[in-house]
Image (cartoon, rainbow over all chains, first blue to last red; front, side, top):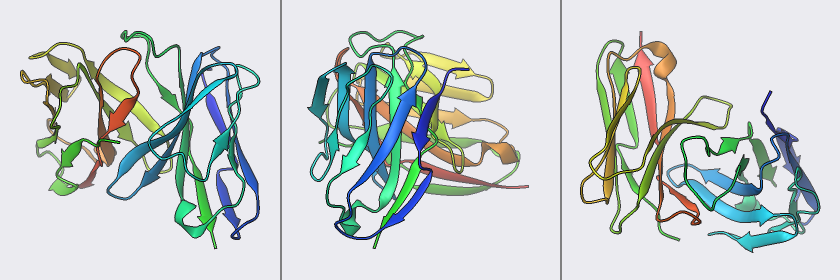
Length: 117
Length: 111
C-alpha cells in the first residue's frame, strides 16, 4: 500500500529541547516536502527536496532543518523549538515536481501535532 | 510567500444541501488542485485542473478552473455527513514550482 508515514503523531515538548519528526515514503518518490498547518493559514511549505541530497527552503523555513540522505526518508529537525512552532505538521511526497500529470499527485502523511511549551 | 484567498472559511449546512467554495489569487496559476482533509488525517487530492475554463467532476464534486487563471471553484451537490472536513485549494504556477495552498474551508454537515 502506498504510504507516507510520519512519527510521532503527537508530541509535547519544552522550549529549546531538540526534536526530530521522521517521514518515510514507500513509493520511490523523488519529491518530498514538509508543511505546517495553522488555523486560517492553510498549509505553508517549510522545506522541500527534489531528490537525495537536494533540499531547499519553502515559505517558512526559519527554525527548521531537514536532510535527505536516502530517497525514502525526509526528517524534519527542530534544533531549538519555540512556542510559535506549535502546529500541525505534514510530510508529503510525489513522483516529481518537474511535470504535472494526473498520476503525479502529492501524497500526504497523517500529520504530527506538536505542542511546544 | 503568496497565499490563495479561499472562502468561505467555514460552512455549516444541512444534509442534502449543495455547497460552493472558491479560491482567488492576484496572480495566474496554471494548475489548480482541490484537496479534502478528514479529521485527524492528511489532505487527499479530490480534483486536478490543468486548463483554463476546464470543468471536471468527481462524483458529487465539480470543480472549475477560472478562465482568467486566477480563480477556481468547487461545488458539492447533495451533501452528506461524510463530506465533513476541511477543503483546500492549491495552485501551481508552472511545472517545477511549489504548490501554494489556500487557507481552507471547514465544512460541517448537520444530519
